[in-house]
Image (cartoon, rainbow, N blue to C red):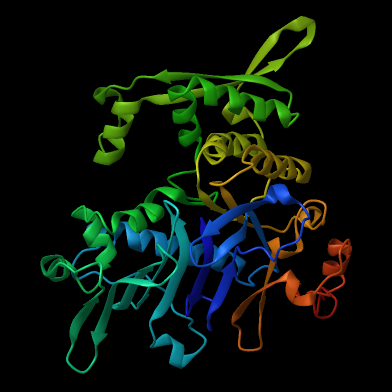
Length: 425
């Protein structure tokens, strides 16, 4: 589970900003927190849900993109980045000083019941520092620290009492790759739990790109697992879309049927998996069943179907899922229904966490979200994104959060200057 995520000097984020999933206590909405016990700390409540609000261009999606970059760099830097390739990290560009500094990414999380703290600093040329600690018995235990020495142009490693850095792996770690990423490729058993959290438990979904979120993802889940297919059908029925069921026909593709200029990877995948023809079954008059192809359905219906498969993952596994613009193209009550379904399904630890950015103000309701589960982004006078929790404003219990937000009580609103007018002159 995610405990907190910090980022500094990335896109619109200048100074360090931290998103914390540690609940502040209290007995409200107990189903939306997870009771955890950690050695050295004791009982802790971690939120299952965190919502980030803010004006357009305030930087809320950059919090999402920062964690997505971190995941990509951990999972793929050892295998996907070429030796001479630049790291595609983007510092805060409105400050001349920040443009020349590395970006920082750090997470505090749990894997297999053990707390870890992992992070790194990186610019387009190299990893400047990298560190991993665990807390198996409450006390901080060092795995390794990696530091680049600017004076000697050498990279030095410090290992801990219970972990010795393999010098051969350190030598294989390029300046534009992470040691954790390299060690995982060589099955370093001590470091694999931390790596696998990024690879398997952390899911970042947006509606323009995601290997975990697409129509194909839901199709594959439905075809492979009849039980989860039933759950997906129930989600569509719950949404009151007029859909009773769905059908999937996988059409096999032969080499000769494909365009000659199709990329090899796409060609192989189509020949391997075929093309899925998805139809939704609606109830017509006189008890008839009418089928509509997915292309004939609304964007919201297509989005819900794409969500349905991953949502069954979330209800059956311990995941940390971050969705950018969760409520887009969906009715607010449907968004609420999906979140409630997730919270009520997983009643004990381990459980899935759902983080999301949104403009949906109907969720700003203390009967639905706890005060410590609401976050805002706003840009300061230097153009930097600031991320802060609603609890900074100490709202009263049962305070009308939506009304307070629209009144500007918590900030994070667009500032509209003057009246919009078009002159012919």
